[in-house]
Image (tube, rainbow, N blue to C red):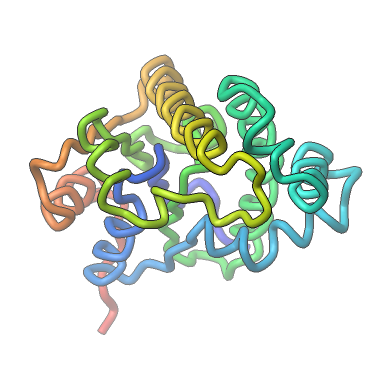
Length: 220
């Protein structure tokens, strides 16, 4: 069983470069990258569908998404959407912990993803230096929305009000980013605002410097 208190965590908000930074660090150090979105697409959703009693919020979300996507993206307010996502993050974090615990003992792990929230990660840390939370500045968020096709459109079919759904999504993500900042600040956990003035390699270097006491070294 992997030592969860030895995991390194990169959490934060959408469009801040978490995945890119994790990949750069994994190229420099012998780390297993646990990608939150990868596991969602390949197992978390299936688990929530199959285990409604354990994951009621996530199960209900997926059921709504299957039957009426506008009830998820268009009808609720961004505030309601953010509250729902936070409930789902809490349930999914239990899946994350189960996934990590199933890894071999002493596996050096770098976990990254937007669902790795400060309030969820904090109880698993031996040191605050084992986690960092990346959030985009407002100007960088706007540039990402303009530059990234996946940020410009929802990949959900059959929406009656796609423009409203996209607007709701953008505002929801802004609220979730603010929630990261508030919780990380309250808990004394490191925050890094990404404003576009540094390239991913430079940002990865800053994260590496923070993680340095905990990074494994090559054995060959």
